Length: 115
Length: 323
View 1 (cartoon, one colour):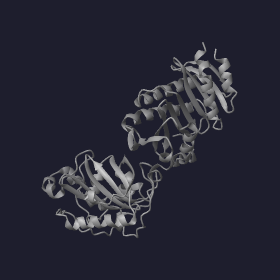
View 2 (cartoon, rainbow over the protein chains, first blue to last red):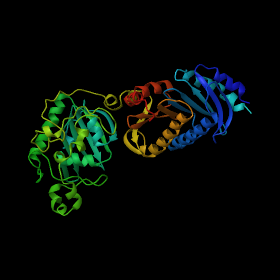
View 3 (cartoon, rainbow over the protein chains, first blue to last red):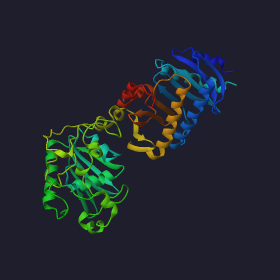
View 4 (cartoon, rainbow over the protein chains, first blue to last red):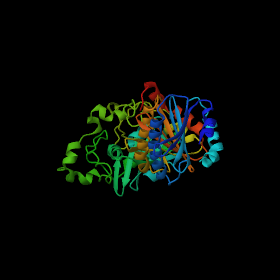
């Protein structure tokens, strides 16, 4: 159901994976060009989301707009879509993060409207 | 005495331990105005060399080593850095010396080199009483007995933070503070642990950003910075209550680092949370973590650039470790 939107992200330079997950760690839909266990990724990201929400709440109970995790060899972005759904993108360090961000913003409405 | 000192030019106020202050003022000339539990004092520093320690709590005045040890007993000190010109430094030193000559207070146990024989009360307690008033009380005090020794009598490793090398808290250069063995001062007031009779350079101005956290504090949009380790705040600058953040922040880092079990991520560099009010950035910083709060105006690109330029990040990557 998110196929069309996920396609828009996976074609971006440096993006190796785009996944829709629930905040309980369940994978809803995924597209990837890199070999890794997306179920495990979703589970680990869900823990990060939980801790992130907890930290954000310490600073005024504000909702998270985005989580950006940077490693030397990979970058992981996650943003809330709706309800308990999050989009998780994995990119290489050379990826244009600004462009990914713009795409996220451009497609936020589409993501919201997806069934 | 504090209010009579030259005002100088304020370059910032923050909270940190004495060790941190001493290790990050290697190129600072001026006065560090100290506030502890509503009482005031100061440290006069010239290019990393603490020249005068002074603290007043009510009628009790602590000077030299006593003040130093009291400051050292505090986990965090609220302080303001005020840089001095050469003239202001001269005036401040003159006032300190004059204050000593005219002061009615005389420390009975202060030997000629300013080293006293009392250690401070444990951290978090009220300032120690003037030693002249409490000497008899302490004679049978086992705590005092156990710790009755001067800095000069300590094992060198115990005051290594004052003798150069790397600060164990922040990993930053300590600016080559000389060891107390070279102490030559004979004035109780001008005695400052870790000083020598070396030639002192003239005062030079530095801004607090360069002095402490380099480009981070100069970056537009940075609201607050805190450095923490193992759930304990080491330093905080700006409007932040670090005690609320550090434990949760460490949990978040641990979660983020577990992502490396899913794929070959390489070393962890940073995590940034975007909330409508701004960004929360956490990154390893030597053996600590640094947490930066910014306004929403700062973008991810700027954040990444600054984080990559942190010296701690470079060191980590060189080690090739996952921290």
